[in-house]
Image (cartoon, rainbow, N blue to C red; front, side, top):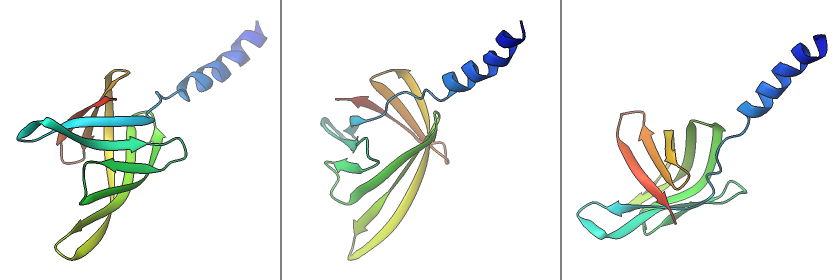
Length: 113
């Protein structure tokens, strides 16, 4: 009986470490141009790349827990480049849909290519 009780916390901790895989190409329609998409690609090595966004250049990503995505990069415009770090809450209605919500409450829905 003691062996079962001791093993249970280990099983629960292992299950909690299983976050959904976020790697891949993620797209969302461009506002006002629904026939065009933009987004990002998340690589297994922590590298992030922008898709169809010349002025927002993603560089890295990390997932500190299953419900959080942190992306870094550069915003380029009007002769200046500004480094940024964005933190998003993740909602996953299914494996190919991801809703990212910023701290200010703004949300965007992305689909996996």
